[in-house]
Image 1 (cartoon, rainbow, N blue to C red):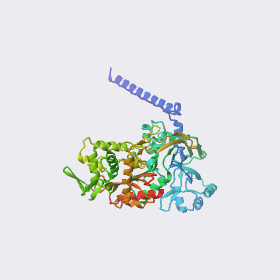
Image 2: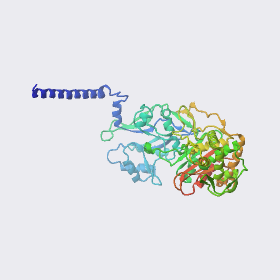
Image 3: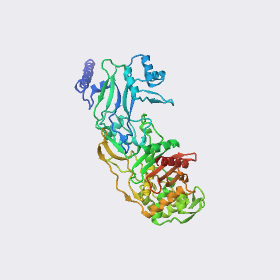
Image 4: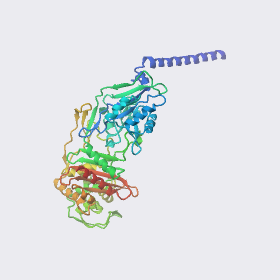
Length: 581
């Protein structure tokens, strides 16, 4: 076979392959554009193409709300605002701008600037007194005047805003947003990849219930390839029934507001507060700091942390567990006398106390938080007894139980008491003062206080109590609290209550500044080393009133470096109690 024939055959083969490829490509294009245009892997391509040319504003997502215990929404506030659909091409009518500014009692230049900067449907925002742009809210009269103004693209509309600058309990609620990877991995790809889904907190955990059918109320118009409105297609409204559910929590809006106001008043920048109903252990309030913006775009690696369910060094708050174990095991009595020279010799080393207490009773040692007393008690008790009573009091395990097959908190930290296999005197001594491996969360600390306040009966903190229909609030499913169990003997609790009262009532008590609160308070303070130079975690955990407890409270300020952490947490606790009574 000569080279000329071989070359011809190769050209024929190459042309055949090219022809086959073109036919396959044209076939695929025909399949996509004609045969499967309405159903390609579950997607309607015609609808998607139209959607690319549609500018849409969501008036109501249809998503169910997250409610407080009284049915008040924590995620949905309705407001009457100025909806701007940028239909204009070229200059905006200056006369209409002046009239709009007059209706809003605003600066015409600010209104003009705001309108020019809008290129997608949105609510009008104007600078507030502090210079930060805020959504303009209308009175009924203003709304009527705007409707009569007939300003193209500017409408008075009642809109449901899911989150605003006044949103409460943000770390508990979480937030929604677009996340294709989350849709694929966590939700099995059952939604459109550009759909907003729950990404954190209750929004994430109860995504299926809150979403319903995924329908809402929108207003939209169509644009050309350059983003200009297409005349003749008009503005379209959609309003479909969604049949979503709302999540009714145990939170109390007024208690939550009191907690967050107290944290912000005293500048608690990093930490958390939890308030429980002392009898039922329902979570009435939970707040974490730093605060975050639920409407901001946040990368997964930067998701906000709910510090109320993250375990941390508890410091002397853990002495409550040691006291309970020692009293019930008969290792200590209130009048037992110890000598504190400011340190405790352990083998070849020393464990330091925060001051030299001298001769001190066990009860005084609790009120004044003497490390020597409680390191000594921990060494007497031994590891098994410490583990036993920590478990009885709900530590080293999740504080809450799942409901409807879902956890009540997104990534709750169970904490721990011991992490090492060995048991040395130094390990026991450090454990006795809430250091070494001990970690508990503010939620667990509040639960610990509730057990004592409730005469030794231990329940389980509860956040989610019901699912209700979002349209009319009818009960769909209920999650009652679990049964209580006896964790401590009555005699132990009575003695502990007396000791905890002295933490506040005694002039030398570490929380004596709380003696000026409207009602009596009992509790325990804690100051924990963090491993960072001059940075400490400061705690107050207790209940009020001391004689007839109604609330159990835990306050944590993390990584405080200025030496004022103890006063900070007590000031926050005092402010909360004063607001609640």
